Image (tube, rainbow over the protein chains, first blue to last red):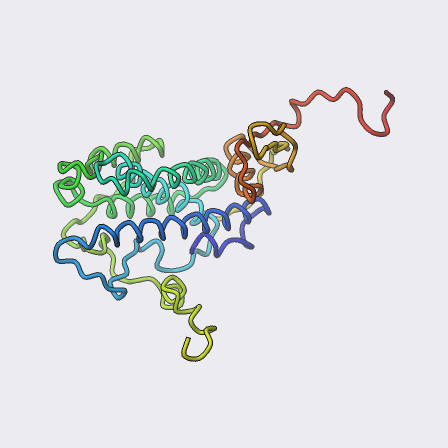
Length: 215
Length: 73
């Protein structure tokens, strides 16, 4: 959704089109993932409830600078792709079979983010996106490492952090993460949530306004 | 973090694609980008409306022209 907001606001026409295309890719990826997870069922104790919508803080509000787009594209998208790779190479058959095409499409997001990162001074946004990516991956010996030990994920937290640093060619964000304030369900340390208008669109509520009465 | 310039040094790439293995590659358009990475991302985003089995890009500068309309042949 945040990508799509830049479809007529990026610095070049080609970047406009790429923003729209990547936004559509990621909406498609969300549908594949939600469909797969619905078939697998919620984890023990979790409630499958729209009110539990979770996102990284970076996506709470629309971006106002192209550098924020670039940082999301280069860093957050890389972290998501690494997790998808790890699921596609794990032992959950539904995910092994369905996520391959997603990775082919994500390759172009990586190329786009990597190239634009050289063009834009997005240092602050890069640090923030990187830090939030690490929070999203989670702490060592948490749920991600448990899934890795069970074979459902091909990589644990340390590997994911290392692979992200390799892709981004850097040591990572300067400040340490305060895991004491980390919310395990929403996978973030900062309070806040996505704005209501965007959430309505993501949940299809905006579309319902145009349905015939009783539809 | 402010963006102050559109790329200072870009080149044009021609985009070629085909729908089936037996089709010849044909030019479907072109993109302008500062490097091969972004050119690939732009070509795929701009010309992916068909179910191509193959797509490739070529820097226009790498094409050697033998003749063209309006020139001496």
